[in-house]
Amino acid sequence: MEESWKDPVVARREAIAGLTTFLTMSYIVVANPLILGQAGLEVSAVVTATVLAAALGSILMGLVGRLPYALAPGMGLNAFFTYDLVLRHKVTPEQALGLVTWSGILFVILSATPLRREVARAIPQHLRGAVGAGIGLFLAFIGLKSAGLIVDHPATLVSLGTLDRRHVIFLVGLIVAAGLYRQRKPYAFLVAIVGATALAFVLGRPEHLKPHEWASMPAQLSSPPDLSLLLRADLSGAVSSALLAPLVTLFFTDLFDSLSTFLGVSEAAGLVDEQGEPLGLDRALAVDALATLGSGLVGTSPATTYIESTAGIEAGGRTGLTAVVAGLAFLPLMFFSPLVGIVPAFATAPVLVLVGALMTRGFSGERPFEEQLPAFATLALIPLTFSITTGILWGLILHPICFLMARREREVRPMGWVLLVVSVTLLIAEKGVS
Image 1 (cartoon, one colour):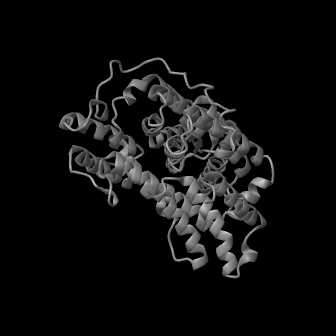
Image 2 (cartoon, rainbow, N blue to C red):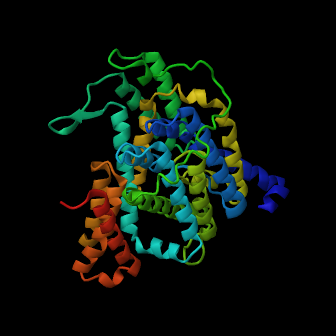
Image 3 (cartoon, rainbow, N blue to C red):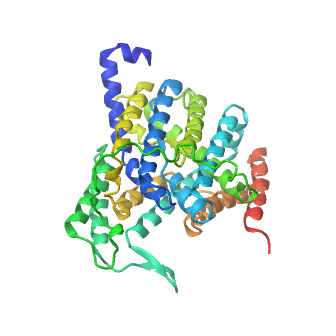
């Protein structure tokens, strides 16, 4: 990266690539606070925490990992934080931040040992793809619900909501986001959120919605960074047998997310060795682990490497300078947290649905039954139980069992059998046996 600073042509190319990456993922500064705000965290404080996690993680990836990959709190991981940890398991937001921190500590320790590769290799590709697709459906469901397209129904559990202005805004936002994304515009998601918010002001609030459910102007447009979530993680409160399953799930989800992203981004950048393994994978995973640890300490859900980094790579980014520039570009946004208050939750729905759809791309193609059943169980149970934990644990249980029934047990790594026992134990500890 030192050569990038010295050569003005290379430095300019890397800077443009870094800004391109920043634009493609800047929507997280709006989306993440709105999702974590539903967990009871102050939106202004989450804006600051999101910016700090993105800036520090990306800069660390550039300086230590020496790779053009930017980080920020992950979509899917923030949904797990709010809907699984806080709303489902009834833990406090501070305890949830404690779980994020412990997950980061576990990730850091594992990254320093060969055990990390064994755990990663024990999870077959079809199961990793199912986890990503299941989380994608989970995000899409949340988006459709926040847009009012899906509502509760006593007989059928869910039903189509009554048509109102939110549906028009959602459809316009989805068309804008999809159209710009298809044209490879780095600002596609951000423009969709801003456009949906502007349209909400134009159309006005329906009578059946409360003022806080619609777009509204804040008293001021900028304010000092809100650092109230800094070091608020409840580490002792997160140490509980009842929270062991969510902790393990958080760790595995972060690991899957990181590995799949590194594989995809590395191939796009050509940063792979002769065996197709990503270059600098150990350094990158170590930085990702530190970013997760740091996320809990600054007050947000885990930061992870973003697949949107490919936009910067396509713009010419090849060194850590790209990630450093992307990280620095986030910092000014922490002074504009009141602007996030303008955005209603349903304005992010088009982005949630589109991101969810994109996450299902890794789950396709025909597979043998012994691969299809565990993958489908994972894919289906995540959105249907509203629990990423449940889907992953059942996938880890069914994978070795189905391979044993198909007489392919030799293909299951020893760690796969260990994960089977761990998953059964965690499910019993969480739900009990009646």
